[in-house]
Amino acid sequence: IVDGNLEAEPAAALAALLQGQRVPILAVTVMPGPQLCDAVPLCRQLKEAFPGLVIVWGGYFPTQHAETCLASGFVDYVIRGHGERVFGRLVDRLKAGEDSPRLPEVAGGDRPGRLAEMPDPERLPDFPYQRLRMDRYLRRTFLGGRTLSHHSSYGCPFRCNFCAVVNLAEGRWRAQSARRVARTVGRLHGEFGADAVEFMDNNFFVSEARVVEFAERVRGLGVGWWGEARVDTLLGYRDASWQLMREAGLKMVFMGAESASDQVLQRMDKGGTAAADKTLEIAGQARRFGIVPEFSFIVGNPPDPEGDAAATLQFVRRVKRVNPASEIVLYQYTPVPLSGALYEAARAEGFSFPETLEEWVSPQWLDFSLRRSSRLPWLERGLRRRLRNFERVLNAYYPTSTDLALSPARRRLLRAVSAWRYRLGVYDFPLELRLLQRLFRYQRPETSGF
Image (tube, rainbow, N blue to C red; front, top):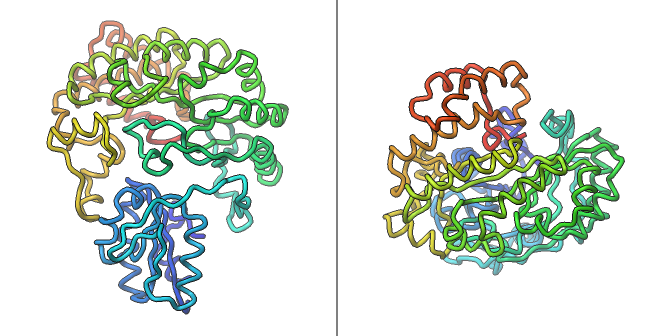
C-alpha cells in the first residue's frame, strides 16, 4: 500500500516495488481533482518505465468516465463501482496468464463494464492497519488532538441528481453494524491513541437505531466524532437520541442544505428535504444540543443563476441568525453525468465534459472538480465575483471554528473589521478582508478539512 498523499516521491516508491515483479499490477484509486492531477502523470511515467505493467483504475472518477480513462493509452482496466471483490478476481486471472480477462464489472478494450455489486461492509475484513504507519495519519483537528478516519458504510438511499454517489450506489446503502463500528473506534483509540474520528460515510446517519446503539457503546470513551447526514433524517431523530449523541462525543454534522428554494430542491430530487425551512429547523435543533451544524449550499443553479444566488445568500444570513455557530460551505453547481433537470439545464447552456485526461488535469478543470470553476457557462464573471465577495465577508464576520490557527484575538479583529459590511450587506471590493485573511492564512473548512 503506497499512499501518494504521504510520499515525497511516489513514483520512486512505486518503481522500487515494481522492480522484479513477474506480473506487475498497479491499482490506483482516483478521485476527480487533485488525485486525478497526480495520477495521470504518475501512471504515464510508470507505464513508460515498465511497459509490461498492468494499470487498473478505480474510484469515483473512472466509474463515471471509464472511456476517457481507457483512451489515455496507459490505463489498461477500469473497475466501475466497488472493487473489493472484482479486483481480486482480476488479479487472479492476470497472474494465471489469462490475456485480456473478461469480467462483467471490468471496463477494458471495447468493453464498457457494468457497475460492480456493492459488497456488504459487515462481511468484509477489518482494514489492515498493521500494513501502515498509523502515526503518520494522526493529526490535530477541530474534533481532537489525535484524529483518524473511518468509513463504516457504503452508498446512500437517496438519489440527489447533483451527487456522484448516485452513479456509484444507485440508491443503495449498506453499513457495518453499530457493534462493529464501535469496536473499530475502540481499536483506533486503544492501539493508536486516537481521541477523534471522522466518519467519511456518504451518509452516516441513515439509521437512528444504528447511530443510537453506536453512541451507547462509545459513550465514556472520550472520542469526538463527525459525520454526514440528511437534514430531514436528523429532524426525525428523537430528542433523547440527540442528547445521547452529544454525550457520546458528536461535535459536528455535515448536511447538504443545498438551496433556499423549494423549487430548486425538487429539481435536485432531494426528496423529503425539499423544504428550505427544514434547514432553519435543524439549525435550531443543533443549537439546543450544542452540536455544530455544517451546511453546504450549491449556489448559482441554472436556469436562473442570478436569482438562485441572491435567494441563497439571503437564506444563509437567516441560518446564521438561527444558529451563529453554523458552518457554511458555498459551492458552485458542477454537473455530474447523471440525468436530471439540473444536468439537462447545464447541457442546454452549452456544458460538456472533457474528452481526454489531459484536459481533465488542466487548471481550469481542476477548479471545476473543486466546485469553484470559472468555466461554467451559466455563471457570469460578475456573479462569480459577487459570490466570492460574500463568502469573504461571511468568513470574516463568522470565522470558522475548524481553523485552529486562528487565535481569539484574530477572530475578534476579523469580526470587527467586517461588521459594517455584513450588517449593511455591502460585499463589493472587500480588499481589507482579503488582506487580513491572507495574512492569517485563513483556511475554509471545505479546502483544508478539519
